[in-house]
Picture 1 (cartoon, rainbow over the protein chains, first blue to last red):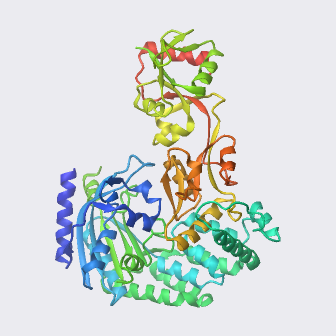
Picture 2 (cartoon, chains in turn purple, brown; picture 1 turned 30 degrees about the horizontal axis):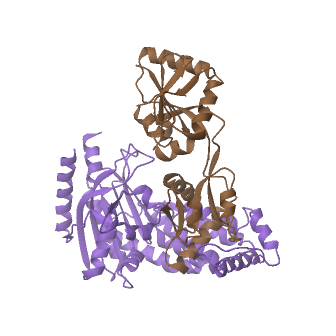
Picture 3 (cartoon, rainbow over the protein chains, first blue to last red; picture 1 turned 60 degrees about the horizontal axis):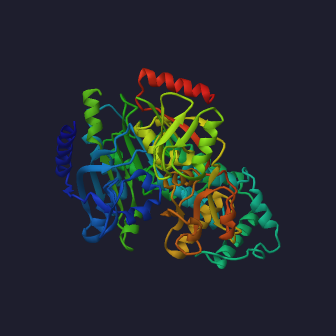
Length: 359
Length: 230
């Protein structure tokens, strides 16, 4: 089975090379620090960590995107197309029945000249690899969600908190509930805010977090309380966008309607429209292509624009056969100040084989 | 074959376990000297006592080398992935109570909930350039708890002992540890968050779901369960 998947991966990779991609082969062992900085402690529950006496903590690569971006940012010239094929490793603490080691074949495109065309290229190149399988394609756009949060009328403090948790839907909702007053203020905070000088009795300060940092957060809490509950109309705008779930064509109209009340959404919707045109130019039927505004929020949190997944119609129980998206901000974080707009995706050859053998 | 019962090999946990079985008419005792880790069982046939470190008992149960074992539920849940498929809790023994909690410096008047901790962690990372460190030895349980609670921008640092001291020593900003009374925390100027604890733990008798049992062992185990009323 493993050998068959490898053969399959090589065949898929060859077609990506034909499509103009340069093969790359990042190391399996990656410095843990980079991944921890990007994903936080949660990555430890998903990736295997090992240690090297000289190089410190290392991780078995949980995906290829991060090392490919690092490689491109260090010495690649844009535009560039890369392909790779190899194992990724995922701890499956909660789902031991899932694979902890599987193959990915990937395609990454670094090109800032025409983002809509680049999005459409990655989508159609990966779709073409899966021709012959009965697919259900789902798309989304994290950029639209970010534009909503950037555009609604709330304090910058609340806005920053929402942006930070955009990729954690449950926490995002909890923040909205608190900002809108649906969740009552916790008693301990009410008590703190009722004090004339909350800093008066803090006692001995231990540890690295200083008195001035504590005072700054107390001031932030006071400002938040003074701001009062978020307006229902603003909350309704967020919910309206999160609730968009229809064909791309209808979604576009729907988002245009919402943008009437939220002009800041306009530019993101323009980008969405340009992408649809680019997809149509490549022969994608955008009238039937699905769009879900909240799609891709729970995946790895570097996607910040177009996102997509290609699922099997016959086997809805399988994970997506292919997934991908745009990750402009990741190139900035790993590029030491430089940024190259980039989009990419992966196909899982093991799942294609499972479909073919009916297992 | 015999039914093997694993019991912590020293201290209060061992004595209290012996007392608990004694109330059910089963006498457990160390065999021979204080240093010998073999035991004697009186009052029931076909059961052998194995004295082990409390920390090893979860693994021994999960591998099926012992059939029954007494240890803290915290240790079982931290050390065994999908613990409930490997062991079954038969009885809570009513001692060894301890909560696994998250504690922060008591001077942090602005931090009382996980929501606060998350906000403080975000600001801390911006200011100090590294994530807020939480010292613990219960990595899996604490990580799951913080993820469910929506806390980001922290990192766990390993601490196998004297965890409460890490904050004053500037090797962590907060701790997640077992506490029974909270006195050590107070002495170290730390306070417990007003949230449900990560885990409420007590000494518990577990049955291995994977250990082999002969027909005779099964009868012994049923007899033992009747005696201890589970």
